[in-house]
Length: 286
Image (cartoon, rainbow, N blue to C red; front, side, top):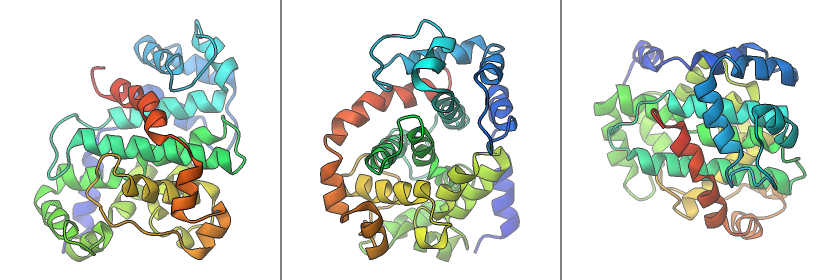
């Protein structure tokens, strides 16, 4: 069984977030940041700003007209959306683009992206505004970051985990607990705290498999539901193949079973395809 010290060292080995993203997070996640503050930070990083503007003007944001600048983009999509998308780009880009033990990076990020898209759609179905739903997207994209820590820095042990999880009836988190003494949810939460990610995003990372242990936030509930829906429809793969049906409490909260909620979301293939540019731009060197 892996020691806590080993897990901590692995988390510490993950690269820091880009300075621009770190500065955004240091503005404070408990209050609304002003557009001027955010744009002031982005103005110091023209390369990252151009990447962000490309994303905002892509089908990902479904705007009726292109924004000529981030100032205009902030007006069109809102400051919170701009910040959450920027944090997501920086966080995904912090991980090296290389083969990881047992995980195919393209499949892993497709699963993560689809979970973010699905969480956003569920949130909007529950009444969240488009701008509010950007935090659900961010949490969905990052929900499995603990797996990357395990795959990159604890490869031999995580290889054992993945082999166990490939057997029918074995959830990956159960295999992690047996081999590592912890789960990707806890490791991901440690990384989320190290990076200073928004509290609700960190909570979703920690409790996306056990929403009943959380504060009951909508972000956790929607990410949990999205993760199960995405596994059911096999959008990518992150090493966990066991689909957990909604508990009665989750079904009541969301107004239906897993199958019913998934059906009401519409064409997920189309929505995910429109969002693929997010991962392309987030990758190092894009």
